Length: 423
Image 1 (cartoon, rainbow, N blue to C red):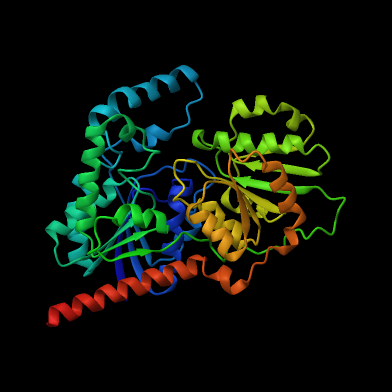
Image 2 (spheres, one colour):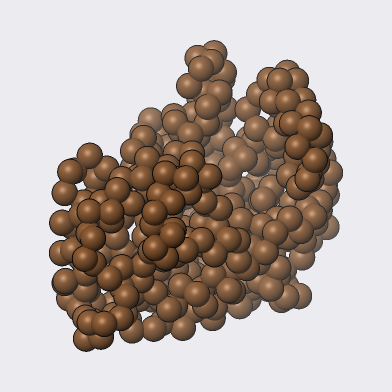
């Protein structure tokens, strides 16, 4: 049986997109015959989007180690506003700047390295994959390789690190950013291969390391969880055209969402409805109260992953908002839109997402400051029947395909190592 160790700080039952990639890759690697030992921390189920169903295969063995960080307390829902404020203040003013200036996995290595060293020996495992963020998972894996030089190490980056504009401490503390860059370099130099989720992230992470083999293996969708539904083709003219957005409208996406809703306001005669699944900012609720009153906008709140996909299947098209300062990303949700054959209307700024939508003709992009977003919405709806989802193309973005790419990479690295050893 093929075996590997996965170091993944975020993992079910933690809820949210941070766990989606590897919860689902594990599922399909197990189907491909892998015994997977997942190294993670003790998580309490903190929401409906926990993919624990992906872990039903007995070949996926989860080892939950102490984190060295109060990870569950940091995420606990505290109803009392005063207590919640005190908790948050302690974390932001004391715990993070003095003890965890980079990320919450900084002290995890004290638990991971000795445990995994014993596990590698006991189970005769030679392949380790570490995924970040938190990026100290990658640092810990590099330290592990220093002590176990014969292992094959794959460093998986779901985002860029030291140059990532969404990590606020690196924008305000140049010394800390320089330290992060040094740690990033150490993590990459230790790797037998580096994997990134987009070409943009790959270029950013590996730009100074041409000698390290690097690969782009994108995120995907679970084909067992998704049943494609033909999208609206313009025939039912009396039916509202429904856009659905899934996920939080975080602080860095508010301006893009605002630009879309302002454009929607101009389309006074359009029969359009928008449904938001996930958290929606109170500021936008107030600003666009007229769209709520007229039932153009509906907020569905947080739903389970299964309920989200079921709801999304009823949409005519899907929405994506990508922050201006991070165009190299592709939101995880986009792959589920693709799996469900939903054309994508994206407020974004070029990069990998635009290339994906353009290459396969799966959607369009508008920029926040275009001034003609309303016209692009109208054109998008008018031409909705022209978007095509060839099933062979769609399958390339399933987690079945993603797992095969990882399987192929592991075999390639193992064969290369075996050849070197013989030589």
